[in-house]
Image 1 (tube, rainbow, N blue to C red):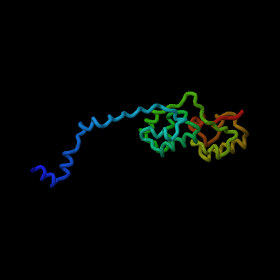
Image 2: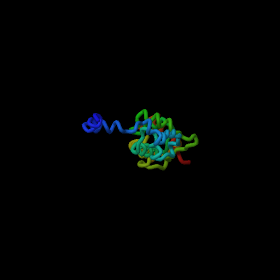
Image 3: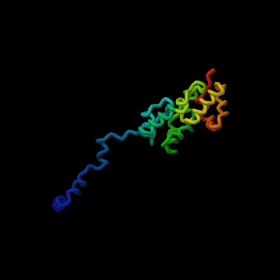
Image 4: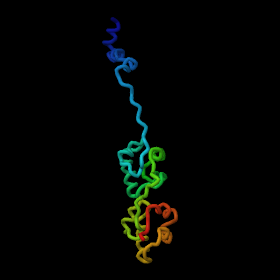
Length: 172
């Protein structure tokens, strides 16, 4: 009888004492499903939804990765992931662990003898001034014979040329 009187004074205590314990509840509930391990996928064909399955990448970052990849012409190295704005080193590491680049992948290329300033400047590795310099040089000296001829331009240093090389070509 004392317990009943105590329950009237403290109804929360009574509610807590009448709840089903987790041990008794395990027979009524299915065991939790283990998450499926994420299968590696091709970064150059992945859409934003697939990229967002990597821990730490939401819809905004996945859209940013796709946009950068498309402007770039495709990733040729996993080192390029760190060039995507807003990706922390931990997320870059996770992205490297869950993605791959096909060995046969060929990125989209720009013909440096045909592309205009806007097309060249749209590439993430070129500034507007560098693109303009390329077009002016081409107009003054004729078509480029090889991509390596860009080294004659003052605004394009060897490291920029090395990064650009997979994305440029010279038409025959």
